[in-house]
Length: 211
Image 1 (cartoon, rainbow, N blue to C red):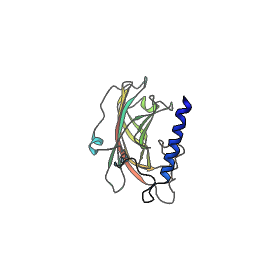
Image 2 (cartoon, rainbow, N blue to C red):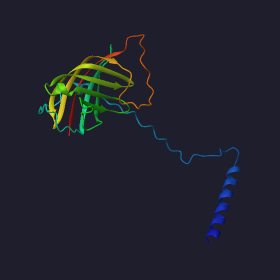
Image 3 (cartoon, helix red, strand yellow):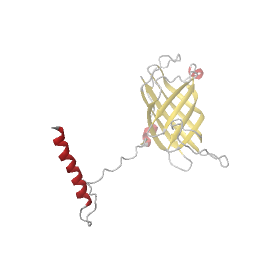
């Protein structure tokens, strides 16, 4: 029973191939199956938002310097980046990475990542946070292939507890650095030259995270 079905099928395949090779020379051998329009590629995703977002402030909340029960699943950082001679641009990135920011153990490291390898990191020493809500933080911002870092950014915590952390930060001068914390390890990145002054940018903004 199976042999009687397979044999005609093989003949049909061979005949179809022969007809394809013997068509009218004026006609192309391959015709598109449909003449409909081709779907456009998806638009590039950008984390840029209205400048008014950077003028907002995070909510105030409980302050607990014991720094216990930290596990944050939601949140975002809104960052203003100003290059010399240019207007400020505002970006918003959602919380990303470990739910416990106490990594490494002597710091609280908050990560916020947008599309591609863009994002911002905010790192504060645990020793400072056990005593004050006004501290210096290391802030790194990666935008459009450039990474800027400020080592002593003035930061004010408006909420600090297991219920959430929120604060503002200001870095009047950040400097271009080599190494994007959000880029894959095998992603090539040009190392800044030392023959000319490194690019700088002013960075400021606010962030909030919650369980």
